[in-house]
Length: 121
Figure 1 (cartoon, rainbow, N blue to C red):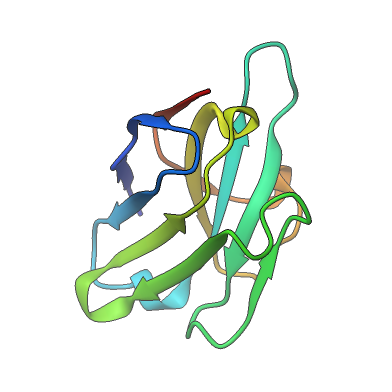
Figure 2 (cartoon, rainbow, N blue to C red; figure 1 turned 90 degrees about the vertical axis):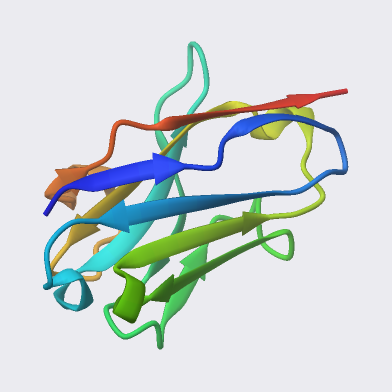
C-alpha cells in the first residue's frame, strides 16, 4: 500500500491542523495505521495509532486530549486532528500502516513521505 500525507503547514500556538493520510488500493481496511513525528535532532516518536476498524486507538501522553486519530475506510484515508498545538509539536509527521496493531515504528511495513508541521510561538 502507498501512503501520502497532506495537511501540514505553519500555524500559531493554540491553533489546529488536520493531517490526512491517503492510501492507495482497496485493502486499506486491512491495515492498522500509526502517526509518528520526528523533530530535528530527535528520534522519531509515536504519536497515535488506530486499529483496522477504528475501534481501538492509542495516544502518546504528550498529545492526549489534544490530538484525535480517526479513519474512513470507505475513503482509504486516516486523519490526525491536532488541536491546541504547541511549539514542541513542530516536526515532520509521518503515517505508517501495517496489518497488525503495532506499537513500535520499526514494526510498521509501509510509510508515507511525511508532512511538515511548524508551530510558532
